[in-house]
Length: 149
Image 1: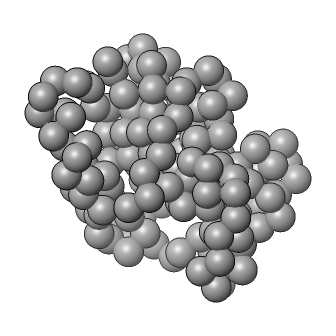
Image 2: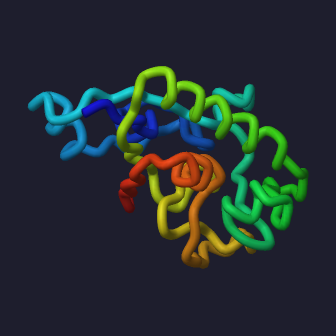
């Protein structure tokens, strides 16, 4: 099965802080041939640097961002919504190109969050919701799986 995978879960140092969150169980699934991973980082695909400022969705979740009802702000208050939408669209192009059936996404991320994201206050509080990329992939018919690492 071909899967779009948040690259940080595969050990790629692409998180906002320049690190990764290697998921050993996911790597084992890859090694066993259960999935063919297509590593992506929506924020890097948008042109954002690594490392970069921490960002959260303010006023909703990724679906709300795509509908223009919420914004993605960094911890300094800069509006980076356009870059997050651009990155999501680039990931969707890749998913369509490779015929991905599923996306394995890093939970809590403003891009990849799947079921739970930070609440937009930069206090560590969480809320139910999806990141911008996960929302776009879900709207496009991909099955989304999240991890809490």
